[in-house]
Each structure stands twice: as C-alpha cells, then as structure tokens.
Image (cartoon, rainbow over all chains, first blue to last red; front, side, top):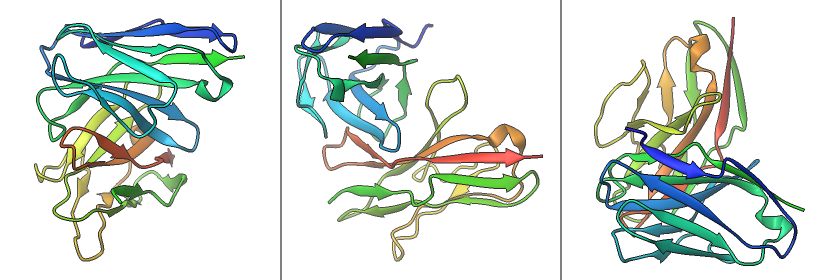
Length: 113
Length: 109
C-alpha cells in the first residue's frame, strides 16, 4: 500500500497563477485533510472532508478551494496564487473521526514568486 | 478557544538524559490530545494519544487537567529521538486537529 500520495512534490508559481494539488489514499479512509506547514507556525488546517461528498473549512481556508472527487481523492486548488501561499502542503487521511490516527502524505513544497 | 501551546521551539539534551517536551492546551470539556513526530526526511506520524495510555518508543504523556498540560516525557533520550514533535488537540468538529507550533528535539552524543 502506498498510503497517502501527493503530486506534485515541488512547484514554483508566479503570482496570480492557478494550480491544483492532488492527493489520493488507498486505505479506504473516510476522512481527508489539507494542512499547510510554515516555519514557526506548525501545521494549520486548510480544509477537511469528513466523508465523501462533504467538505468543511479549517483554520486558514482563504485563497483555497477543495474537491472531494471520490472516496480516494481530495484536491486543493489555488485559484490565484499569492506569495503568502508559499508553504509546504500536507494531505492526510483517517478512518472515521479525528480521534483516530491521521496518516500523512510526503508533502508538496510550493513557492509563489 | 481550542488552542495548543508548545513553549519551546528547540530543546537540546545529551544522550541518556531525561527529556520533557511541554504542551499546554486550552479547551472546554474533555480534550482529546495527541503527539505527532516528524523525523528527518520522513512523514509526519502519530507517536501517541492520551486515550490509549500507551508508551511508544519509551515516550509517555499524561493528561493533567488541572494544569491543562499534556507533556511528553522519556527517561533516557536516544540520538534517534531527534525530530520535530507536535502536540495536537482534537477540536469540537470531531475531525479537525489544532497543532502546536512544534518543538525540535536534538539529542547529542
């Protein structure tokens, strides 16, 4: 099992460009999450999907949109990238509620110039 | 507020010394708390959660509701314990975790 996979691993964008970060899990988990990790800030939740067909905002949703394409896939879209969105983005999944372990992907390092 | 505070950005100890990584929380009700760890070039992974009351890799963490703390402890640190440690709190949503800013632990020989 690959667990949680993310593409791409690295990306450089110019201000105003758009892109979609892809995430997939093969553990048949119901819940999926998107976090960003910034130096000195820890991990902050952007959006989560408790189950297929539902999405909810986290702590820092502004500037992002998400799509829970199916049970396996959860994508994060930046419509008009800004330098403040330079970060490492992590996708995670869990079986059921947050009381269960969240399994993390390897991350996507995004730089917005 | 549902918040986690890790007051130390960096903690450096010698091999064999005891280590304590501090975590304080703000939450109304009974909190669900976790420690996650990220070793160099590895994925973030769960270390332990208070509901399991388990010891993983020699680490333990006790929930102290009076002091609103969930400190991570190990009696004898090893070099392989060097990593970034995050304390996390399950929010009222039942799904979202609020993470602290993390503590980088460095164990030197």
